[in-house]
Image (cartoon, rainbow, N blue to C red):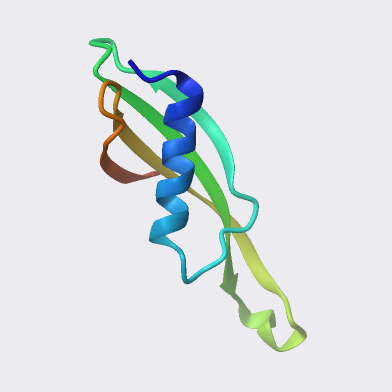
Length: 87
């Protein structure tokens, strides 16, 4: 079975490969949990998204944090899914 650090590394590598065209500012680990059946690691990562606002002419943008949850097979390390987490 994968150790928690390995599951986190897999999730980090995976998100960076998906968003290789964009920078992911302030990428950080939020949560890690092993499912009750011990089959999957669920890893939540977040990063900052800058949205244009009415103040764009002043060079400002709204900053929001986007959350992604990765389900990783605890035996193989394969990423099974990536979902948007809403609070």
